Image (cartoon, rainbow, N blue to C red; front, side, top):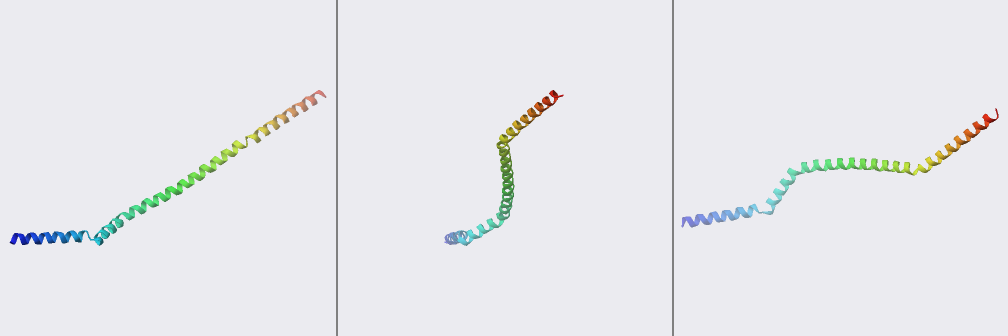
Length: 105
């Protein structure tokens, strides 16, 4: 009889502990503990990601600006060819004028 009573008491105690351990407020407590412990690390990761994002945006802006400058140089090649033609024309006129001046002497 004593053994059966002891078995009943231990079973009841185990059941009550199990109910208490699975109580929603206990789960919330452990969730809160997890958040409290992991939040500083998450905040550090967030700050690092924000710094990386700012650096990336700066690099993207710089690359875009450089690409735009190169495109403008390529687009201006028409003007460089025009200037080159005008310079050749001016040199030709100068040479013609020099030759004419030499002929009159």
